[in-house]
Image 1 (cartoon, rainbow, N blue to C red):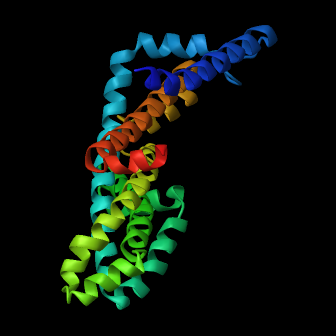
Image 2: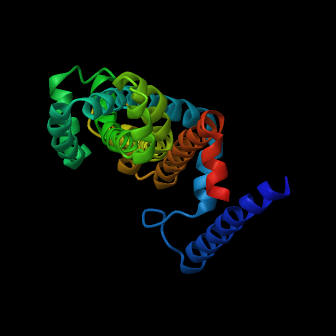
Amino acid sequence: MAHRLRAVWPPLLFAAVFLGLWQLLVVSRDIKPYLLPAPSLIWQNFSGELGLMSSTALYTATTALLGLVLGTLVGLVLALLAQRFIVVNHLMTPLAAGLAAVPIVALTPILNNMFDITSRTPRVLVTMIIVFFPVYVNVMRGLVQVQPVQLELMRSMNAAPGTVVRLLRIPNAIPFFFTAMKVAAPLSVIAALVSEYFGGPQLGLGSRIASAAANTAYGRAWAYVVAAIITGLVFYLAVLAAERLAAPWTGRSRST
């Protein structure tokens, strides 16, 4: 318990000091909300419309989760194929890098034209594409970077390629997978949020932020930003919890 408190209090103290200085700066300088709203105004809007904030965040979180799951599955499957077949590796590596270089603001309008803009499909696909790259690259690295002595031992035992993958490469790739997920999970929320700026159902955080800012409701817009931050933190903490359950040795290795 004491160890957990030691880990929690520094960020909490920093957040309290930061918000206090922010509030003091806005009040003392009389900064207008359209430039920088005070934390008290943001909290007033957030707590006053908590139900709406929750439903809006849930819509964006659902889009992000669908894209995260699909992008992770595609990344895992292609990483396994690329490790096994050199042709797939040569084909997918530059393609994955190219997809990662495409900005969300350019990708979303194209997919909106290709699919029904009133559905969730374009936003899920954008999120899937953004998630795919870190998962593919990290898992591929974990599958390939095994200890040579372990690989030689498996070969000396005449292990089949499938056995080598199952008993050596996949366990070695587990820490790399969770490293990828720690990046991809919050990134999926960002991708889903940004994709909501470009039309479609006005039910997510991105569209609500844009609408509130256009109507000069800057406190409300920042309140939606807070909801987006909380959503991203929930995704990240979920990955940490899954890592502790599936690979507890990774946490012990970091602490030693």
